[in-house]
Amino acid sequence: MLPWKRQAVRDLFVGLLLAVLGLGGCLGVSVLVLESMRRPTRQLWSNVVIGSDEAFVRSTLGSHYKEFERTSAPENYYVSGWRHKVRPISSKILIYMGGDLVLYLWLDESGRVEDIFTGGS
Image (cartoon, rainbow, N blue to C red; front, side, top):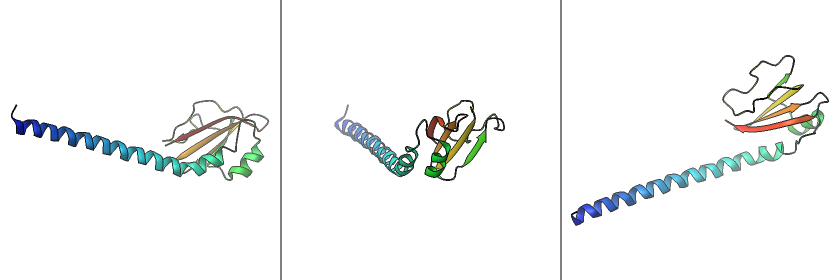
């Protein structure tokens, strides 16, 4: 191979490598920024745990996005376009939205949180 061709191939390889590393760095920064934006919502939502009662949930998290009773909920009660956990409603579900996150809280017959799921869009 001619010396100038070797140099051209080497320059192309280095350019591609730098482009890949640059894109990877941008992706990493994007993930860090996204998580820092989610942190306040996650911290607030982390106050609700399995066993929390409905009054505590409502006073801690405020207004919910949707609420369904088992007897009147549609079959597909999940928020369209957002991650979710497929499971039946035992008694009631409260759905909260925060930024690009969704929180599902399933309540049992006594009004206590029996299951929690947090997902993104």
